[in-house]
Length: 143
Image (cartoon, rainbow, N blue to C red; front, side, top):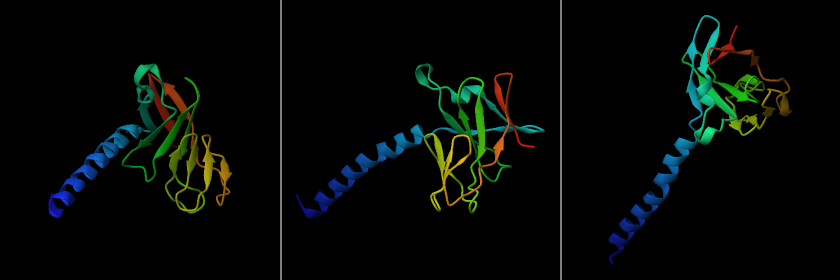
C-alpha cells in the first residue's frame, strides 16, 4: 500500500470513530427545551422530564429568545421543582449543568440544585424563580 492510500484509509477510520460519538453526545444532551412565554413567565410541558422506560430526567434547561440566560429546572419529585437562572453571580458567565450542581466555566464557582453557593469565588446564591404546576405544565414565574 502506498503512503497516500495509507493516510487516506487512516483518515477515514478516524472519522468513522469520531462521528458516532459526536452524534450520540448530541442525543444524550437533549435536555434543552424551548419554553413558551405568557404574561408572567415561561410555560414548559411536564412531559419534558419524561424519558424512555418510564424514568424522569432530573433536570431540564429551558430557553426562550427573550431571555439572556437559560433557566435550569431541577425536579425533586412530582410537586417540587427549583428553577435557577444559569448566570454566575460572580462575573455573569453562563453556567453549565454537572449532574446535581451548576458550575461556572470561567472561575469554577459551584452551586447546588437549589441555587446555593457550594464553592466560590461566587458568594451570592443564584436567582431562583417560583414554579407552579398548571394543566400538565410547569409555570416558571419570572416577575
